[in-house]
Length: 307
View (tube, rainbow, N blue to C red):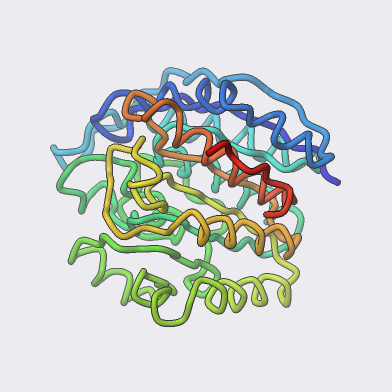
């Protein structure tokens, strides 16, 4: 089994609601390390990263905020994720808001390019995050990573994305909130959008298995980016971007078990957990439980809760 490396990314700068910077600590308190080692995986915790000071060029879009900080996080996360993958480990980036994926996926892409393997992206999220710094109206850069990863224009302040991921290797899964501008751009790029309508009609298994078969056939690496708002807010309230109608407890665990059985996941993000908005840690514990399933925990391993 590959060693797992935990990397804390206490980043709040990609949006305006404080609290995501407490995410890494919440995952540790909720027992993430033990959930992984209980399944027999060796583990190292590299601690929380510190954002380097970076001076970003002015952005033509006046709505964009915190560009310096997001750029700094992008650089350090790209470096550290690539280092973890070079060691043959599976990095888990504990966020932090979703702007961290600007760096984590860049690091995975750089490593995959050096290894001569294609990188695939599974985006488990209520949102498509396909804005660019030039098109966002909120100015929140956590809504831009997929556009950066896919090679859209508008990221002049950022390092060129190493080997942008072609549309056919990106799967947006669980989507249910997309701006009109993002929707039009997604159609131009022909990215697979498995929104909740698709999952309601076809179930969660068929679309995911089809994507995983693509990864397997290509001998690819797979980066999974799991946003708390992929889950229904009734079971995961600790997120500042709640959208009703998300995946259920059973559906989410099934997705994780399928990912484990595939053996294809090579890196993982856990993003947008805001412990300040949680209810007695229920969201943090659920996210940790989902990672347990990704690592091999089976449904019959779960104890019955007291009635």
